[in-house]
Length: 217
Image (cartoon, rainbow, N blue to C red):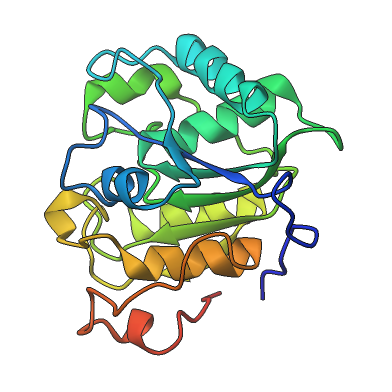
């Protein structure tokens, strides 16, 4: 069970939910874009160069967004944004004073061995260092961007709780998640209630999600 990382809520301490997209950004039907539009606490990180990502440039821009927040930050990363989060942690070595208090890492891609898109190669090798803040990694069993066992290995290396999303593809717009209410539940489980009460699941046919979001070993 992931415990809440936040102190008792006050207006000064409410966290910024910093959304970290991956390759090509997150379009209007992506759950990250919907969260940015629907949840006041959410903000999309502007990494730039979405079609031609550069690792160090993205690290610097993420670092700037984190430190400009002026309050605690929870990173919510999708796809290549997960690998970026690991690289940011490795380069910046965030300690006890870091604003980042947790991360929700969704559908990280394979970048080391035969990545699906050669634009991912610049982010290899995937950092294997444990993240210094609580995190949850969500992976699908039929994600075309990474093998399920590889995703589980990343969770172990990063020290993340692992959540099995069943057969939900890359957990992107093509997965037809809508506003991904199940993801909001995971975010609240990580933070102790950072977003409004989620609505019904969009994946009612997935037992892994409909039975209380069980963490898997």
